[in-house]
Length: 116
Image 1 (cartoon, rainbow, N blue to C red):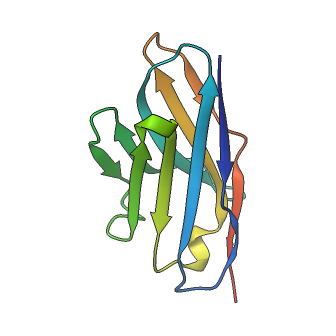
Image 2 (image 1 turned 90 degrees about the vertical axis):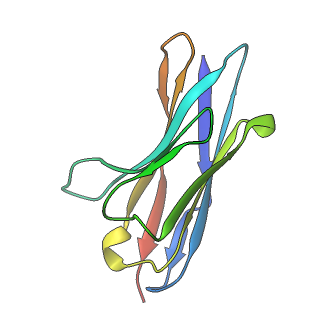
């Protein structure tokens, strides 16, 4: 069993930046893939960005060029840095992880609100 805990959400002004963290904990697991997803009210969950165990990243079109996903393997923690935030970035941001035995896990989500 793996637990994912997101942190770093909150209220940000348009044009600002934010950083989110996702810490994974549990016993005897190897993460092979992690990602950030988001869901705005009334909309489907969408991809923000992903990172493989080797560090290869991929980004959704709506955040490409202004987002960076990174990870610290020693801490089992993934990060999301987003710049030039827009009101349409307002959503609940979720952390996702897939481990070596195929298990898939989601965090509880953290609210990000972009508003002046």
